[in-house]
Image (cartoon, rainbow, N blue to C red):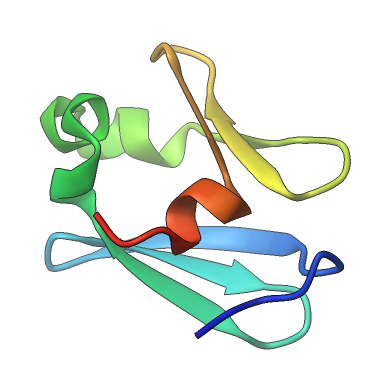
Amino acid sequence: MRFSAQSRVKSLEFFKGHMVVLLQDGGRLKVPVSRFPLLARASAEERMHYALAQDHQAITWPHLPLALTLAQLQQRG
C-alpha cells in the first residue's frame, strides 16, 4: 500500500516480529523488524521509546542511532 505525502504517523506497535505504523488517517503499515538490525536487537523497552518528527513523517529512537521516514518504511526490503 502506498501512502500520500500527507500521510502522518500516529503511533507504533510491535507485534510478532513486525513494527506496525499506525497513521493518523486510519491507515497502517506493517514492516518486518528484521529489516532494521538495530531495532531487531533492541529491547522491547528501547523499541517503544521512540519520538515522532515534528511533521509526523519520521520516527526516531533517542537511545538508538536510528531514524526512519515513512518513505523508507514503504520500500520493500
